[in-house]
Amino acid sequence: MKPTRRRTYAGLTLLGNPAASLPKSPRHATLETFPNPHPGRDYWIRIDCPEFTSLCPVTGQPDFADIRIEYIPDRRCLETKSLKLYLSSYRNVPSFNEHVVNRILDDLVGAAGPRRMKIEGRFVPRGGLSLSVMVEHPPESSQAPGRGG
Image (tube, rainbow, N blue to C red; front, side, top):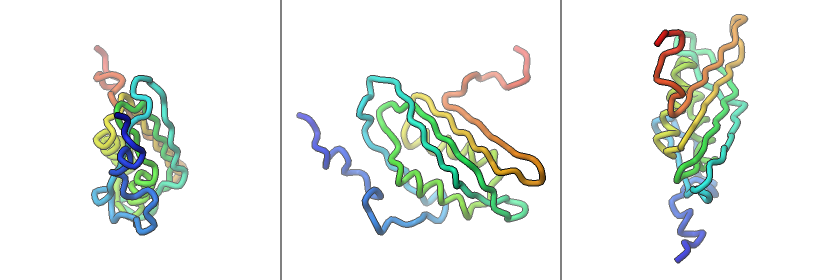
């Protein structure tokens, strides 16, 4: 028996909910998923968040970034409204850029269990330096960069 659309998406509480509000922090956010419509095929999904904001934990100044999420889903796909609210919840969270990108990966892998996932955060230059952080699941290699084997 084929599941109905209503039953397939019954767990989605944020999509189509005009009362859904911005969570206080990523810890308070809900990342929702739905069944992968093509679980037998590897295909990439790319989501760009060009207006990401977090806070520097030392200065309290905002850090702006373009966050790119790419993944091959397994059984579940990320629902984008819940993802948007989750990413927006970082705007009041003091964290170093490196931590932010790694936490996003950990949280998204925990929610959707993808076959592969890559997260890149390209942060707006401050003080004449630009910073990009890239992280993957599963790690491309368990060997640390710059270390001989």
